Length: 68
Image (cartoon, rainbow, N blue to C red; front, side, top):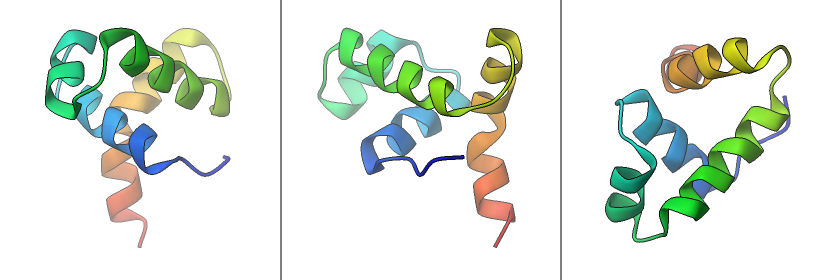
């Protein structure tokens, strides 16, 4: 998988906590549209179908912190 930018990683962390794009926008000081764009960029880097990508996105922070 291609590397995530720091902002993409922030968005993934928020998504893994169940935040909506609006909530992510408020938390990170960006627009909801930008939050969604970051999430879509991350999803594009992942293999598989849309539903599989969503499952991976929710688990990604856990996977990244336990792989070290």
